Length: 164
Image (cartoon, rainbow, N blue to C red; front, top):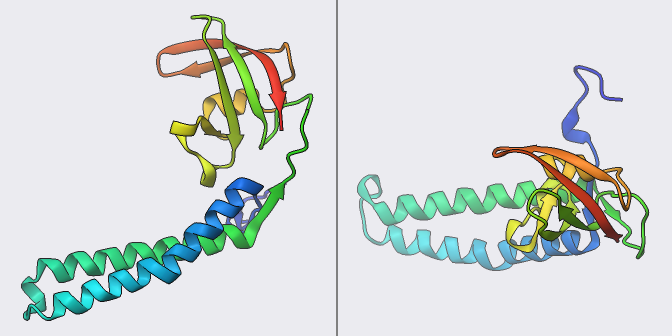
């Protein structure tokens, strides 16, 4: 249990194996390629002369700050990461579950992959366990109906299938 004053930053971060490996690849690319590219841009921008009015230099320095910040963020996530085993079938929704749901309002069927915040990718239907839909699904089982408050109102989903 987290008490007031506890350092929430030291909390474990649950990642799927796929998400962990994607972060490792991104980190490697940032360190091996992006750093080099940004350093080269800074070098080229310095050749234009006066740095105080050099838009290329300012942009390159901003890119450098972004790259270095992202490296630190990924290293922090990986240092706290706990990989979730995906073992096929599961009777309750957890982080790592792939959940097929029926929207009882419009009868559409959607499949979501429930992931932690660092892995969210809306285009791939990877939603956070902290999102309204993710929170509602966590702990529910096949056949359960969950209610979710969304910006357009309340929606009910029936869980059709859970895979890991």
